[in-house]
Image 1 (cartoon, rainbow, N blue to C red):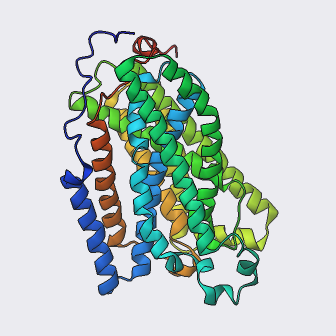
Image 2 (image 1 turned 135 degrees about the vertical axis):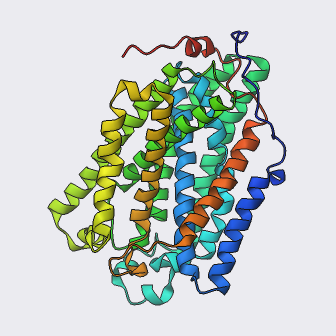
Image 3 (image 1 turned 30 degrees about the vertical axis):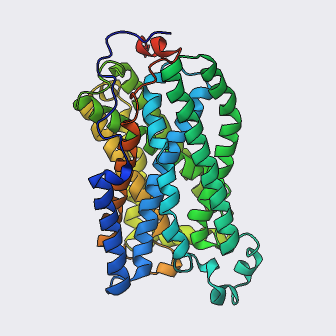
Length: 405
């Protein structure tokens, strides 16, 4: 099948060589390495640095997982409108190999982040002893090897077949990706759920919420759609995907961002309401720590900033079809996702700050370092091939897409 004409912007980014040749990669490594050195040899504290590192790691992991979800759901639903957006999602999901490498410092500092990894603490805690069969260092590492094996394999599989279709134009490749998307989605659902339990919920191993996996998924997905809007708008600003991604596509990305803002709020409220209604000490303590001192304002800020403000702002059709306004709304959603993860990670009892929000320069340092690393990895992938699936059989449908409402 021939590609539609008029897509002169369809070309790869410059810089598709080795990711190690990217200045952004080395600046990011320097920032993280410098922060780690300052924590170890200075008075910043390695535990506090690891908190910041976990925050940045989880933020960028969630974006990559959101991208992988979009790739899977696009194939599972045989989506036509999203074809010209799917390649960008494939490229963002392809950064999961980098997340696997960056997980190593978390393993090395596991006993400073998680109480259940400290034998001296477990020895005097009956609850942790009861969960030791699951929450132990060796099994934790095994599970994460499995998670990353699934995620990286899925990302690589769909990206590889999509790229191969650019060369051959074989429609059978589309059918293969559609058939693989259903089992892929099942694996994705299981792994993202247990990964959220391991990475975030087990920071307080006494606490549990069976809906927490959905909470993390909803935050990951809404933040990915916000990132997708920002990436597309930036690409168009520098001369890419100007014809293949239209205001109609951006309108739908805005609608999906709005929808998952509501979904996140629904899950967040459901979790809070059920725990409040049940009033069990082992569950309510998690929220009590987030309603003490300055954390009260952070909780209220999360309610307003992660739900009320984007809900009211993105409700308008006008906003979703105006590039500047959509960019502002999407950027705000990304910032609120950082606040959400900060609110989850920082108030844990092992990092007791007497109700004060423990802001630290390490937070900015780690977020900046991770941002540079992931930008370098994504740019390297985007530089290897076209920014849209040039010979996808549904490309013409995507190019002709128009919103009806």
